Amino acid sequence: EYHLKMMGTADTAQHDSLAVAAVIDPSLIQTRSLHVAVETEGQLTAGMTVVDVDGVGGGTPTADVALGVDRDRFTRLLVDRLAALDRTLT
Image (cartoon, rainbow, N blue to C red):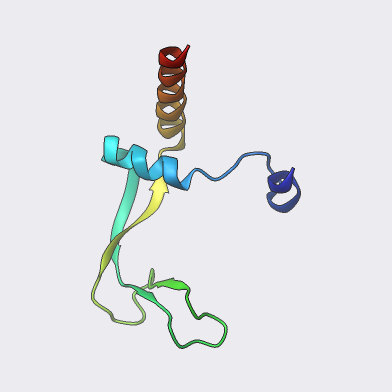
């Protein structure tokens, strides 16, 4: 209900599942090497992770950042793994 009300969809984010899936099959995600920093002094942004996607800050890339996902392949992998787990538990 929360996701439907706040996001307009009943789907939930799968951040952790996608991270594990990317270890299993790195081709599921598209990444770019970008400068990433954690803001420690901003009045409105303290504690936020800031990614310089456009390169305007001129910083050296510090992390590979996932910017795209093959949603259909990820969904199939997730559902297949959950179904296999369910079969082992029953």
